[in-house]
Image 1 (cartoon, one colour):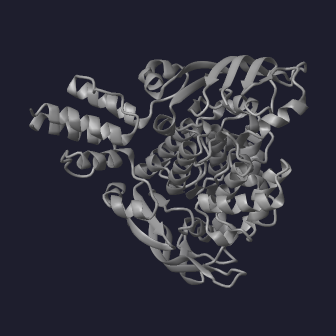
Image 2 (cartoon, helix red, strand yellow; image 1 turned 60 degrees about the vertical axis):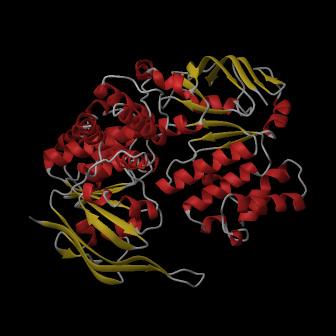
Length: 288
Length: 281
């Protein structure tokens, strides 16, 4: 399902003295099957934006189009339910939303709420436990007896259980240790590729945005200010700086290295592996 | 040098309802000297948080000896010792009690009966130390994560602690907030000689420490200066820890056939090394 936003604006507490404009004239186009990273400084409107992508918020102005459904200020709440079957959101610290007695029941809750029979929901729960690399015996355990990293996996399984075709991730690795962060990001990447998901990642990590996304959307003070491939967006360090955003470490290092040898490398390196390859090529080039 | 804290073969086991007890801290020994900045690293479940709980007397060792300020920690001296330790926890939203920044910083002072005329200058001084003196009457929930953690540090500093413990204090912050907090702690250490024990995953923070303690499965796996620790890249990765960017890049460069000499933990060092390489060929 394609997603597009046209001139989307949103105000919290509209029409009260506490009215706060969180989004202004936001435009974006997210193709089915793409991996989009949304980056922006704290308070840039990233989180408000993602709440629009499954109808948790309706725009005050403009149109959000998800598949063939248009959401505007006047869309009825009933029409949004259909959309939510297709869009899964993994919020920050999703483990805070666990509530059932057992892991199995917690994962089954979402699909059963959407009318999936218990047998089928149970089967999916067990598939997901496996897919997320959790030990088989967690199914009958209380989710609250698990480690932090395992609890997060269970919460993610709960979102995947109703088979969304669009997966929205809000800082999914916050608070995990380095190994946990890497494992979760690799897992989402695998799901994205194998399940053909449309993935939208909201992140503070320029490194993750550069490594995983094929398109980046930059938010600043409630507006969509830049969009393009990671190579495009991270080529413009000056402009990113005005939005209080930095470069991925590999790109920053590449710039330092280019200054040193007085010539640019062939390509903008979006990962450390690429950077090592490009630097090695440049150094070996001189030898010939 | 004055000893601030020492552990001598300290162990702690959690009893579990489901039978198997879990040894969270296993025969750990180390000493922290006045003015040192110690980083304790390890993956989740390695025992580092249990260590923190032992240091502030939330738990007591089942074996071994734990001295804080040269006294063995026990139920009688616990409160006195805790009053000389400042702690900042992970979640900035869970540690606010005051309705304004200055009320919040004054909270512990009020609790400890510090007279009003001393309280006011101490609050101002503490907030100045974390570069938050312009926010006296701001409401805490309107601050950014980094600002909140700096106020939490000011709250700890107002009690003039001899030891500051940071328990993953930067792990929930955005990159800018993390930089703000690390910079403030670095400044404090240089200007006041405060002893800092930081439990962290953040490598930039680890690189600033005087000494790093690596925990794995409840045991102290190694300890030493950051450069010496990061020279053991493979072992660190094997236990689920990350390496600094420059160390990771050095490894990929070696794999590409570039013979990087020595261990470089900062980007600056690695660029210089590459410059040498470039000039010598």
